[in-house]
Amino acid sequence: MEASYTIVIVEDHILLSQAIASLVNSFKDFNVLYTCKNGKELLTKLKTPKNIPDIILMDVNMPILNGIEATEIVKKEYPTIKVIALSVEENDITIIKMLKAGAKGYLLKDVEKDVLELALIETIKNGYYHTKDVSNILINSLNSDNTDEIQLKAREIEFIKHTCSEMTYRQIAEKMFLSPKTIDGYRDNLFQKLHVKNRIGLVLYAIKNGIYKI
Amino acid sequence: MEASYTIVIVEDHILLSQAIASLVNSFKDFNVLYTCKNGKELLTKLKTPKNIPDIILMDVNMPILNGIEATEIVKKEYPTIKVIALSVEENDITIIKMLKAGAKGYLLKDVEKDVLELALIETIKNGYYHTKDVSNILINSLNSDNTDEIQLKAREIEFIKHTCSEMTYRQIAEKMFLSPKTIDGYRDNLFQKLHVKNRIGLVLYAIKNGIYKI
DNA sequence: TGAAAAAAGGGGAAAAACACCCTTATATAA
DNA sequence: TTATATAAGGGTGTTTTTCCCCTTTTTTCA
Image (tube, protein in one colour):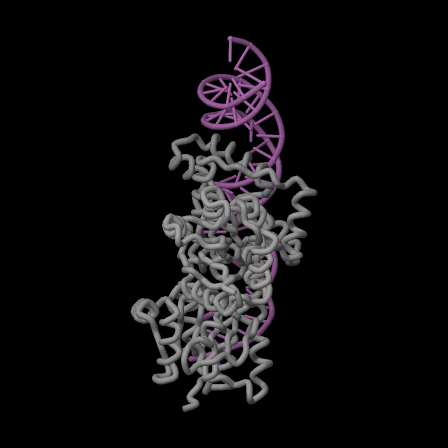
């Protein structure tokens, strides 16, 4: 029988993308339709009906259009496509965000290839696949109500970015056309909001959450 | 003819490791002997003579024993094995460190698979392979004498780590059983040494160089 | 072994960061 | 339409950081 399912890989590192493609192609019943470098490229591709796959293997950290945003759009526009997240990120919040966005599974990049194959099979069969680790994270996140997203405003993000660039608050004030006193307000506000003690806490938060890239 | 060359892959993310293995096995004339999760595992494996490969594809950022240290040891103990670095790291210093350690090539993880194959072929044939980008970095590094390694002392690293944990200098002084004034000296010294403007620069440096892990 | 370099400690002052608390528009939702 | 939230701006005072200068002690090495 010709029961082969089509996979699309979205991953910004081409070599890894092609390597994973090679692996997936070695699985019985699965073959890779094409690969993409980021979410934007994927959305362009999907506009052609013959480019609609059964499953998308989606990296989370990508430039231009990241995995979370891309998944949201894909689920809205092509609800039949199943998305499996593939990431090095073990961060609870990222995982939850990705699942909220509509991913049917979340695989860490240090699983065995058999797990990947199983995830593909199960997702076709049952519509989803979760490893034990991810299930645990999900359960924990339901218990503790840490789901309340800290929502940062564009202006606050701008401020944080400048802080990360070793600028003094006075310099930031000039750059943002605000008085140093207003900048003081931004800072005080963020310290409280993000539960940090000082500028360094801000920088750490920014790096953790992808606001500032090293 | 039976002219097949053996490859070992050292990479901490198992799925990627196996994916790259699948890719390399698809190349004519190359096949993967085995894969390792880190440098330590590699060194254990290499003790058995039949586990000596022609080429090692070595990730740079790994836990336990990283690519740079592992390469140094491999080159010393098994000088005939050729090491090719495989990394997402585009950082000049990392690349130079890796090449100094004895790597015969440095590939970024966003090259095409053909480049990987070419690198393997060329390394067998000529003993080395460099992409244009890496060659440029090498040339630049020879011109500018930024080769002078910044050598941090254990005590300085301790200080930086504390700084990264949102501690004030007074708190650090207590923790390190030093007077706040001595801590001042550490800081001033490091600012100069690492060419940074303030604490934030220190934190950024620490994260970039793996001194402080987020 | 004696000079040089590095580590440890410090004084004083200016600048910046931090904390707390306030006003005034301006939306925005009940 | 009146509460309520939110964005922008600010005052005052304390603490911490930063900078530039210095001395003493300990290592290092020529």
